[in-house]
Amino acid sequence: MNKSFLVFLDAGHGALDAKGNYVTAPSKQFQHTQGVFHKGSWFYEGVWDRTLTNRVASKLAQLGIDHLIVSHEYLDTPLAYRVDMANWYAKRASKSLYISNHANASGANARGFEVYTTPGKTGSDAVAELHYNNVKELLGNRITMRPDNSDGDSDREANFYVIRKTVMPAFLVEHLFFDNFEDAKLLMDDEIVDYFAEAQVRTIIQYMES
Ligand SMILES: [Zn+2]
Image (tube, helix red, strand yellow):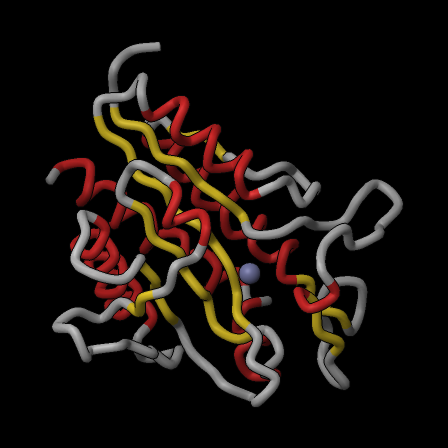
């Protein structure tokens, strides 16, 4: 391996196994009463997280940007394993970035897009801000943006395991709320998925060049 820039992509949770069973926590799914989603009425967050992550990986491959998907194709592998993988390979790269892809659920019909870093000022804040702005530029007229401007930047702060334990700059993205029908419909739109992926690739390139 050459010492180079390396992006770690983490699709949250698990997805569907060969028998079509959703192999992750029941809270990571929602059954809609209208519309067409995965397997009919169900929205499976882990399936969507992989759809987006694979789209990002495909764009990075076209651009020749080194990346590693640290999540499994469908298993809900331990977060510690995903982090360990990233931290191990990061030692062999000159610069790296970790991005965890999710969609949200509120149980209260919330809508919108959020980016998270760990609390306090870290090396992750600037890249998270870049990403917030790239999504706003590409999709701001079609989705609800949910910034937290209380500390001078747009990202929200939470001690999610994968962004706390990774040694490189890291952010976690909550792409809309899959238990809201309007947001879930947007998530099933391939064009929206492509815009989310494109924003992520632009963030990666801006960070790589910084
Ligand atoms: Zn999630």
